Image (tube, rainbow, N blue to C red; front, side, top):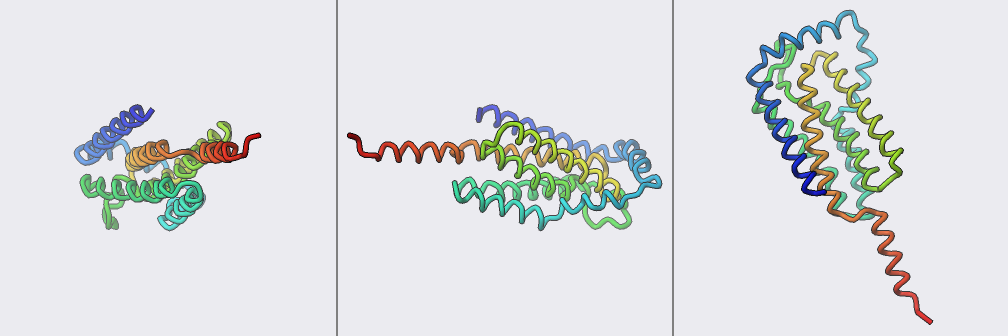
Length: 217
């Protein structure tokens, strides 16, 4: 299973490199298409609803949520607890490094102070939501609950991505780059968590030890 995760991780990294190369070297070509999308989204649109979705991408919320998840996991496995904040940090650093290499201007160049590809707001939101789903997976909750949580997380992440586009802060392809970074970081977390015993396994092991310790007649 770990070999499969590793291959998927490497494939996703290659996709990220390719997407970054396209964003850097074909910016003008992408703009010809993406500007039409922006004009359509912003044409007499009420953006108040989308503005609320931006809250999910606040850095403080992402770090607070991930640290709380880490504290919960720490009751069972301290090493596994470190996975959550470390992978969030990895995603942010990877996003910043990609920005520095791509140097893609934002849609509103006149007011832009930072580069555009990928969106750190989307990365923060994706890591918060994705970490919550990973937490449920590691605790081995029923499959239906895990699937519902995954679907909700995807819908909320799409809402945050659209909110960034509607706000004029990012091109549509910037959010695609963010999704690739999020996927890479969450796969890293999954590989690390898979190597640690799950709570159900720990309970079963402790129960077996207790039974072995009982005196025999």
